[in-house]
Image 1 (cartoon, helix red, strand yellow):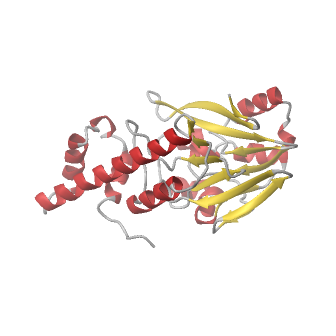
Image 2 (cartoon, one colour):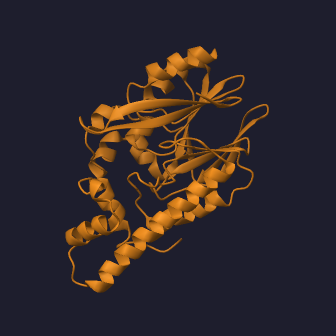
Length: 280
C-alpha cells in the first residue's frame, strides 16, 4: 500500500501460536535505490521481493535495512535480504548480541515458535549508539532516534523529517502492551510526542496515522501505561505481602485485560512496573 510518495507499506501475517494470528508491517522507501524498515518474519523475503518488483525494483536495489529492534517478527528475513543484496544493516548497539546470535536471544527471551519466525542471525554493519543522521542519497535522509522501552535498544527512524517509523514503541490501546521498562517507555512516548512537523506516524503493529491522530494515539498510550502503573502501585500498597502471581491476576482483572493473562510477555510488562529504575 502506498503511504505517500516514495513510502510503501507491506502487511505480513504470521502465527504466534497455531491459534493466534498476528501481523507486522514492513516499510519500503524508494528513491534511486530502495531501503527497508524491518523485514518481517523468516520467509518474508519472497513477499518483499514480489512487492519490490511491483514498484520497479530488485532485491539488489536494497541499499539499507533499518531494524527497529531484534525481535523475530522484525528481523526474520534480514539475513536472506542482506545476503542477496549485500546492503548494510542499521540496528541498535544495545541489541547487537541478539541480532548476531539468535540462539542467545532465544535463551534470554524464549517465545513460542521462535525458530519458525527467526532462523538466522545477521551481521550489524552500523551499530547505533546515539542519535544520528544519515544521508541515504540526494534529497533522502534518515534520522535515527533512540526509543527504548518496548525493548532495551529499540530505535525509531525519521525519514526526510516528515515520516516517523516507530516499530513497536507505541502501545496500542486494546491490544497487548509489551514493554520491558515502564519509565523508558513513557520517556520514549514523550520524546515522540514532542517531535514537530510529522506528517505520518508509521508503526509496525498498527495502521498509519496522520499528524494529529498520531499524536492522539501517543497520548492514549501514555494514559494506558500510567493507568497500569497506578493499578500496580495501588495493589502493592493495599496488599504489601501479595505474591507476584496474585498481583498479576488482580491487575489483569482491574484493567480488564484478562484476555492477555496467559501471555508471558504481558507478565514481563507488569513486572516492569514493580522492578524499575528511574530515568537515566
